[in-house]
Amino acid sequence: MANASSEISAGCDSWPARGASDGDRKGAYWGNTGGWADSSAGNFSNDWLQIDFNGNKTIDEVDVFTLQDNYANPVEPTETTTFSTYGLTAFDVSYWNGTSWIQITETVVTGNNKVWRKLTFNAITTSKIRVYGRAAIDNGLSRIAEVEAWSPTESTGDTGLQWLVTDHLGTPRMVIDQTSSLANLKRHDYLPFGEELFTGRDTTPGYAGGDGVRQQFTQKERDVETGLEYFGERYYASVQGRFTGADPYDINLERQNTPDPEEADALFKDYLSQPQHWNHYAYALNNPLKYVDPDGLYEYEAELLGKKIKVHIDDSILKKDPDALKRIQGNLQKTFDKINAGADKLTKDQIQSIGNMKGISVSGKGPIGMFGGTFLITQRMAENPNVDTLSADIIHDSRHADQAKRGLSYNEETAIPMEMEASQFAVGVMNSIGGWDPKVLRNYERDAATGHLPNRKWKDKSTPKSRAMVFEKMKGPRK
Image (cartoon, rainbow, N blue to C red; front, top):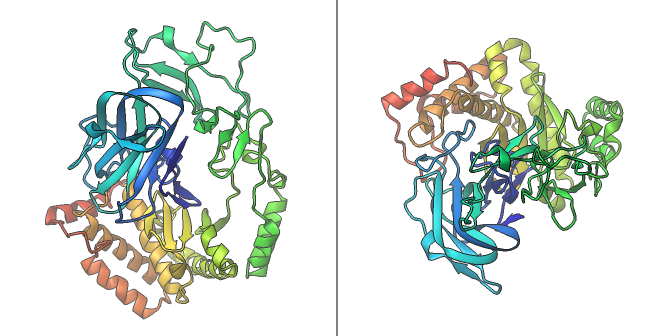
């Protein structure tokens, strides 16, 4: 079980604590539960990620994996893999002695530039550990892709290191230890809705169980006390094939809060046309062989240039101001309508580039920007009465998602040219569609010429070579 001092939960995309204890060292699907990030940008006074063990464990090694530069296309890290953009430069590990947290002095790391740090120390026995983030290279967030804790080497030479081989749904089906021996292979088979098959299996191929792997059906962590899978927002009972709590989504409320009667009617008809949505306890539209459920919630969708994108409005906004839902949804729809109205004037490449944005998430204070295909914006941005500004921002940041697909990493060497290129793209789209607010257009024309840095703490380290590289990459194929 994992928890943290804080975490970013942005609906379509999120960075929960559990994402750093899922067995994936790469941080794949970063922004979609692929790792943990705290929510206090620039403040490292109390950033921690906690891993709770299943009872007391004796450990003498902790491995910490921070975020890679090219998080959209991460590689399997080695102990020599370095970072220069987002990773943690300082951190340490503490353990719980039953009454308080005790720092493990051998784990204090400063001046780090390695994606993977293996920290060894004299063996301790504890029920949980914490990794404290002390500094990041961009002075932004504490970002951790994975944390692993290992027991001392046994006499058999088995250190406990295991690889999980998954099926098309992400469910671990084979477990291979460090020896790679077939004799030590462990296997798991499941019924369609996730109930594991034990009865009557021949133990010879490895169906004996007992490998200690908690990542079960679709890699969700299993609560060993209840036997339920933790899906972030709800628990799931694989034996029943149903969630233990109801999905809070209400189509009637959404219909009432949709300002456009035709859109509201279309949403309602779409909902009625899929009876699998009616059961608020159902899993993955009752089609578990094709779909997975990332967090146990119904997704709200909107249309942008013929593609469905997910839209999330943070609950904290709605608790303080229930009327904000209607205002934000109405304003976002006006934004989508403005871009959609010019679809026949855009090139195939422009439409494809904007289509790289998979969702929009609205929060109270931030962060702001494109993360893992989702455009994170604030409530103030979402309610901006100048729809042209928000429309241009969406077009501009969608280009950043396209830049990532072409293999570009956002850092101090590339920030200025990447912003220039994204603004040039936005200007081109605005001119193609036409009818844009001249002030908004001028602002993006200026940025297309000069670019900008994401915050005051960054310095422009771009060179003629790095600028040329950015524009050359954007002419190449998407990865």
